[in-house]
Image 1 (cartoon, helix red, strand yellow):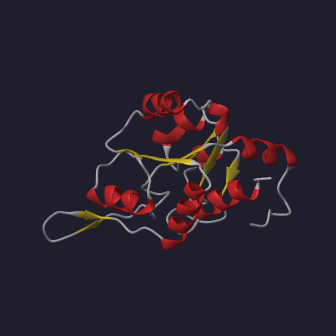
Image 2 (cartoon, rainbow, N blue to C red):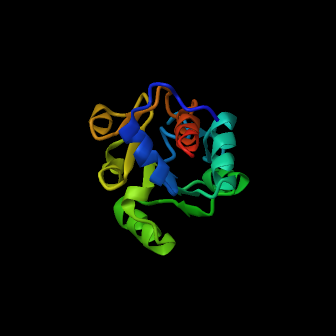
Length: 170
C-alpha cells in the first residue's frame, strides 16, 4: 500500500502507533440516511469499499470496533461479515464503553483512532490518539479532528482512514 505523499511526519508517527480503529455507524459507515420498510424495519446501506479495507486491517492484526447510538440487526450482520468482534449498539455515552474496551485490550488511548461525525462522538474524539471524521461531519466535529477524510460518510471515508493507517506501516 503506497503512502500518500502529502502526509505529515508527525501524523505518520501517530499512525504507526495505532492498534485499535473504531467507528460510529450513521454518517460514518453509512451515509446517515435511514430507510424504513413496510413493517417498520430500519435498513442501512454500507459501502463495499469500506468493508474491504476494514477486513484488510483485521488481517494485519488491528483491533476494530463499532460504537453506535442506534441498535440495528443490519449493523450486527455487517460487523459479522467484516469480522468485527467489538460491536456496541444503543450507546449514547460512548466514552465509558471506549475506555472499557481499551482497558480490556490493554491499549493506550494514544494507540487508537476513531471516526465520528456528530456531537455524540466528541468525547471519544477528544480521547483518542488520532481523531478523524468524514468530509460531511458536523463543523464542531471537524474542529476536533486531527484528520478529515476527503470522502463523505458511507462513501469511502472508512476506507480512506484504514488505507491511511495501513500505509504508515513500516
